[in-house]
Image 1 (cartoon, rainbow, N blue to C red):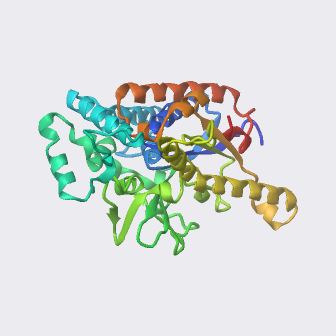
Image 2: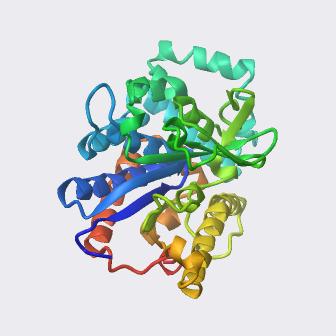
Image 3: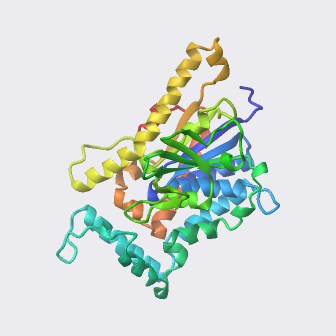
Length: 381
């Protein structure tokens, strides 16, 4: 490819609770590079669960709305102001986060609390107890946007209804899992633009639906913490159970296909040793589940790349192109010390540390791009 022509890049953000603050740091540096050096075009961003939060904030900042254009600078501001608000801020929130995180750690490590091994996630999010707990938080000094997902998202994207869909240039995909039929679901901004060559439904076990703010709630509805999100006649849970994050839709057609796919991985591919304790087993199970669908999608891209070489002079080779897949990941030291329980830690210091590491890792990674090793080799430590 001519060096004067910027490569078309899409970025996928894995879900992983508070660990996705690392992605916010990575995306901040990528957006700075776009703004200052213009070496590549960001044509798409996707995410699942907390990764969907990052993806949507970037997309929203770049999208034209309210009669004005978006920008990388606005995307950086939206992304980081969201994570500033996501972190525990008031004294009551700090105390609440500390108590909740301590309880989750205790359950993870099977430490009795008041003499009982009581499951922290035993409270049904649809039950009266959960609703009573939520009603009692504001008088204690807990912001509604801290505990109410819908309020949080609406505050972060106040002009969503004013997006000029005809002028949107960056595509966003949010992954979710439809509960009743088990359909892999992607909420796709191209549906809002009525892109003619992309059908909304591929088949009954896969759906593509228009993007709304409720799509973000659907992508992050972990059933132990939040009720299933109802959209139309469907109910949705966290996208961890389907695509983490969505990639296939970026490469499925023959138009607007990226040159490179960058995956920000926050669920480590490797584990330092055989998990033995219940806490380590739970952690590793969550990581493996978080990587399963992603690895299958990425491996299929590699298979198609081989087909492009094999059939380069035939119709298939002429209609498709090889796609480079790259991984951006945490340092091994950080990945090894994080646990499933820390995905629920909304402490400001913890979130700031992960964002700072994301910026450091991304700055170094971008300084070497595109002379970088590729997936699957770069997924390893």
